[in-house]
Image 1: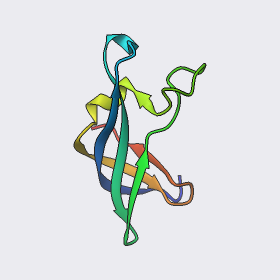
Image 2: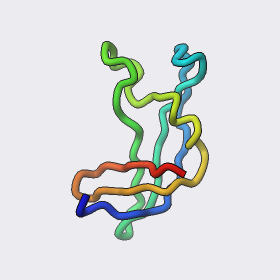
Image 3: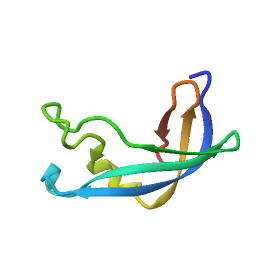
Image 4: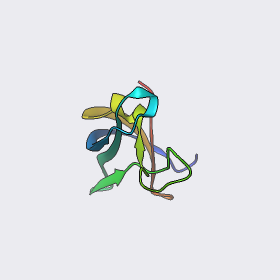
Length: 86
C-alpha cells in the first residue's frame, strides 16, 4: 500500500453482543487517532455472518484489542484502518 501510514491509536469497545460466536462475546470497536491535524474515529465493519446485517462490525477477535492502545496502518486515500498484530 503506497499511501498507508503507521500510527498509534486507541481502540474502544463501543458495544458487546453475546450471540454465541465461539462461545463468547463479540464486540463492535471504534479506532480513534489523529492524522494531519484531524481527530478521526472509525468503527469496525464487515459481517461475521453473511446472512444478516444485524451484527455488522461485531467480531470476537476484537475483544483482544478493546480498550487499549494499538498500532495501526491508516490509508487516507481509502479511509481504512488495519490493526497491526502486537
